[in-house]
Image (cartoon, rainbow, N blue to C red; front, side):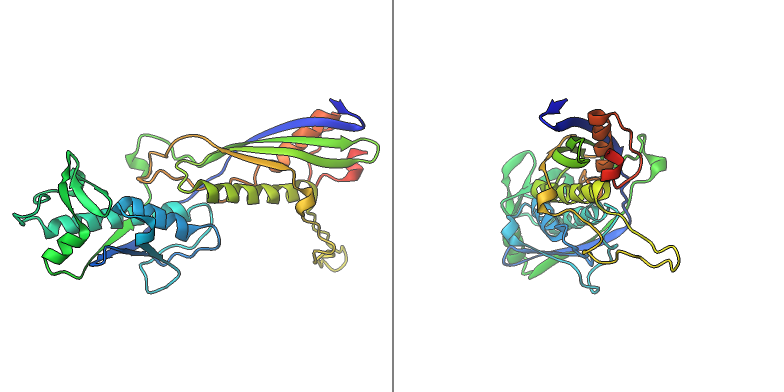
Length: 318
């Protein structure tokens, strides 16, 4: 297709990216003021771990987000793996899920023999949590708040630990699958000058359950920009005689800037992953792979030239 001097092309790439889950520990507490403190030694490298774990903890304990404090980055907290490999959210999340469920059961244990409690004899599978209270699943009115339980029994705080472990492949009847995505790219090429411009990129991702769409979208956008760099800018030049990097600064090593970024859109599809209790798969790295391939396919659609190396440069388009 042609638009004036610009050749227009569309490209698509599909991919799946592996994710990992390893053992992780977490601890959850609720005190007399009705607030929770959930913690693990995990770190947040800017991907929003603290935010999504605060949200998840609040949901699992039936509290408002403002009533939950999530602690991380302290080696005195329960053990956690480091960030990376699209796996921290699931690893920490499963541990938090276990800790919060165990904490609810700890409250139920406190009233197990309490004739004045409508929760006497209940297990965690018999109840739901909402608005800072535990209630029987079959009767919303049959329940009481965390604060009431603690006060009546003269307890300042209850605490529970939880451990998350990855699913055992020998005990499940489905294959482990990572997040997968489709990348759609529109390019415009000036055939006379060899100029390549990106006009639009749409990424469609199945990342399992998305705990915070704004944060997940930001990660996909960041990965997409990295993919743009891989596709048309970034190229390490090595001195043949010394082996030294000849373009070691951003003055010589090109990366995308705002003017290079086209209209971007991200769409999340799919459903929670049934292999974990929180349903996440991880989207930390699925944003970057496939962008260069989609750009190359779009170049082929526009020009008929099949380019199989990156970055795609002016000399390859003339």
